[in-house]
Image (tube, rainbow, N blue to C red; front, side, top):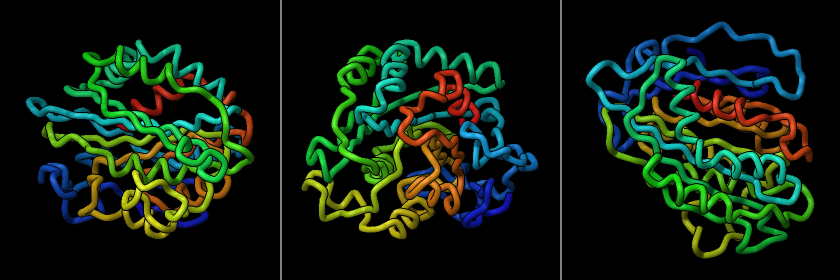
Length: 287
């Protein structure tokens, strides 16, 4: 695997490049041979440049070896401004079946997980919406807490936001510092971003005190947090999936960060070109 290079049309980085696992991560996640964890890297495909094409790719890892348990945490960073009504309606309609849909997708790919937890970081625009710009849920363990998960999602309202861009990078920072599980022999920490707008530059001074210390002051510090092998995310377990337009913030991430797959969306289109099946399949490919 090669590290992502800035400005590349399609980039893949080595999730096993770091020599040590993240704090709290079992030593078995620090894989010397990337093929043991990711199954190798497929040759990059040439993107035709259409809005739905991925800008980054991740090889599909094999299931955990027999006898080992696999724990997966997924954090959804969801833009809940007015234009995102189409995708938010999809999420609400499918919340109660999300667990079974993910499990079916994984089974079809020959993968098995023992524990699945999900949580949501909803975001708007700190400049326009103040304290209402960021809203977090706890982790919900599925399927046991799928009713509570559905209830939280159904309580989200697509409104506000002002003009583009939105506070998506703050949401990513909150997702990265989630209380990730320490259970399981193998772990996967997946962050999924859904937005149809570019991202504001980070401005920690605009945050409410509740988020002080959890959001870096600039993009460079956010990058350091993502790449730190001793940080909150495991070097070989982290994945970031972007359903976001090419533009400030998101193109910066997909051009530089490791373990990222980017599905470019139409700016201002409410992700109308992204269907639920694509979301589920992208999650399945990252587990």
